[in-house]
Amino acid sequence: MRTALTLAFCLVAATAAARPDVRTLNCGAVQAAIDRAGAIVMTTGRHTYQRFVARRGLCMADQRRVPARITARDGACTVNGVCAADLFDDLPGFGRSR
Image (cartoon, rainbow, N blue to C red; front, side, top):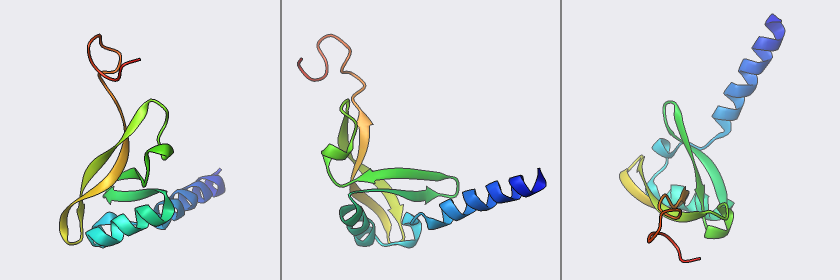
């Protein structure tokens, strides 16, 4: 049991270590990584991460791509983009026409 827990902890730590950290990259490098990968998960804080996408086609059908504001090594930065659900799609008079 102890070996299994140690192995699981190492696997989680290795996965987190493999993720690029936006706090260590400048704004241009973050955007370049997103463009190069198409879709990439990056660490955004001590216990947080975010999936960034280069184009709308990498989002789910009910989502749209929106700009995201992050804190990169060189300060506040807006990158394109993250996938977000349109919260008002289901309300009458709001959202996309069907």
